[in-house]
Image 1 (cartoon, each protein chain N blue to C red):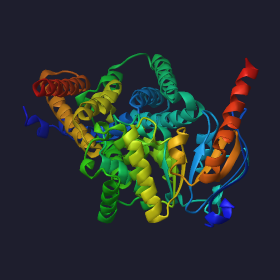
Image 2: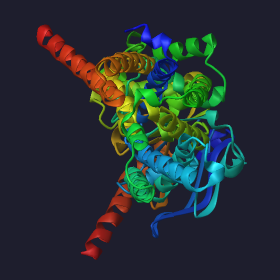
Image 3: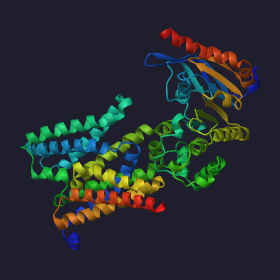
Image 4: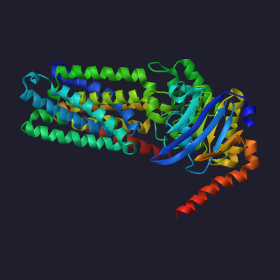
Length: 280
Length: 257
């Protein structure tokens, strides 16, 4: 059973992709959640979805797009969506969280129209929605590696700026931290991560992997650094156990990973509750 | 007379500054100078434009008319933001749930000064530890900020503002939500900082009684600057000034109804 993971290419790709996603999603998620932007992933994932549908449509109707992976259209749409959110946040200064539902609705509206043009729902689309192991290709993995490298280098290089801006944006502005560029680049990275993670957990469940491990980690962490490290740990456990179970039981990989993350969160909450009760 | 006694170079200078928000006039024709070594208290009723004045000085807002100069440079050309430390109004509240230690928050005060693509060095970290000890939080250095009291958290934010070794410290209602004993401690700390490192300070507080005992300059604000002088002069004319300011606002209210 375990040997399968090395024998078959697609399983190896899945495994590597899973490990990378389990690393970058919770890292970005920690920054998003402390900034009260956890819904950002939801908004962008729906925009990504419309990009994938557009890619599928184009590859059917236009010859030169025949062999282009719809994933890249998903990435393009996601990045454009993230820039759109940043703009909207400036227009609605007093209602900044309005930017996300607007973007989400636009993405979902475009998606439903596009799939109706592509002759409805097909198996490919199902994989993008919910994640499916057997669909991970070498190209998907390389795209994900590229995004993961960009995320990790960014976090290593501008960790202190990201922390300062996340903790207190006004203070960051006053102390001369270039918050505008940092916000913009961070949002672009979130967009790319969502698009690149789709094949594994599926668009609808990606935001779960960005938020659930962090939700569990916030219960235990005493410092920001710890919050990130615990979140990575929980995400990796969820991804690896979820993938293994999904392959073994032939379940949808995305759903299994998310359920594993939910179980971890519940276990953390229960442990904390018991500790409090014992302390009394 | 007080101007010549202060003697120091001007750190902040506002010349006929006017600011409007949603078409309503918040500040009108403000001429205000803060000299090196001043410890200036800003007094005024709610909505008198005190916080707006600070935000104009910090470059967070841009005046409709008039000019703001910092350290002799017009605001648009000023880049040395690490010369200014800022402790915001709600700083003592709201951030309790954020997963961060005292050490992490205070170090973040150095981010702008250290600059992009550079990590904090051992030197920076040691300096942050020193500042934390100085504000009396040495034992809490690795505590989650959510576990601190209001007064302790306030000192974290002061340490964060001080860690970049600013020449000007700006505090907006720093004693709101802080218990009486901590307030006393807090002003004593500010006085020590001023005496030791010649820090120039500006503080907004609605608690005129306590504040005016510690500052050496007072500015009374109510859309316009009603008084700007030494705290001794203020003490002598306090009743008259306050009656004029608060009295005005009461009359305005009755006019409306």
